[in-house]
Amino acid sequence: MRKLALGIVAVVMMVGLVGCNPLGDIELNAGDNGIYIEDDGAVSYGSCEKFDKKYDNEDQLEQQIDTEVADFNKSKYSSVDDACSVEQFKANSKEARLVLDFVTTYDFKNYMNNYAGFEPEGFYVGPISDNDKCEIKGTFKKPHSKETATAKDIKKMKDCILVTYTPFKVQVNGDIKYISDNCKIDDDDVVSTSPNKGDLSYIVYDIDEE
Image (spheres, rainbow, N blue to C red):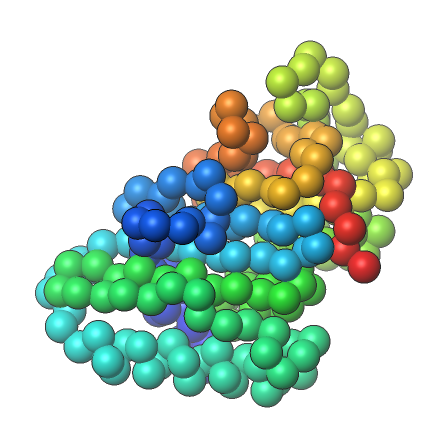
């Protein structure tokens, strides 16, 4: 299942931007990944990629995705039976489109770490106090402000944090308090993490994740 997850997440996902966008104001181009965190901690995750070669078996791909989601929901990594669901899926000979919904950041973190091949040292989302794998380092800046904070300051905060070594576009339906200085934020408060894979980026945010 791990190899299947890597293929699905890294190769054949694309977010449809027609109609209601479950990723808020995030617009994804080919090669982009997006994360939208709701104010209750629910997460929508999408990724956008074109096929390297013609792919014309949409039914088989959809079955693989459904099988993987069902396997995750039955596993020890999910908090409830329907922790993950497919929000959007569409494929043709050139591209595939997929958005996955997770009921909590806990489930999203577990999926990424145990099904999508992300290392625990390079991906975390949830309360700062529960982070025991990802190193927090560097300089942080308050969005749309000159105010800064140190890693020591961040570690003391009673908020949530997203840590990633993979590029993402991120929007939070809440208050983004700080971002690492290798991130950028636009007028819609969509944060783009570092484009360099392996370069840890951080987003500190405040929502109710009870």
